[in-house]
Image (cartoon, rainbow, N blue to C red):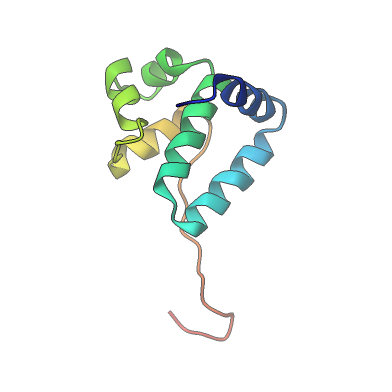
Length: 103
């Protein structure tokens, strides 16, 4: 069961401190926890005007965005990129190797 009070509190935190949202998303991506990523993106959608607003900006239907960010969702790269862009964010690639290693 979703905790709406927690979702609202997180959305408020993301509105007040967008840098925290970026830090949290990067941490989740580093860990590779897709379910946590989807939960956080749902909470962020609330912070960025709600699902209908984010869906419109991302050129997705509201239903498609709800489905993508659902617990069973499995966003494709193009959808994930569009959702993040609607929130003023983007995906980036970063090296995880030590500075001495060659790619």
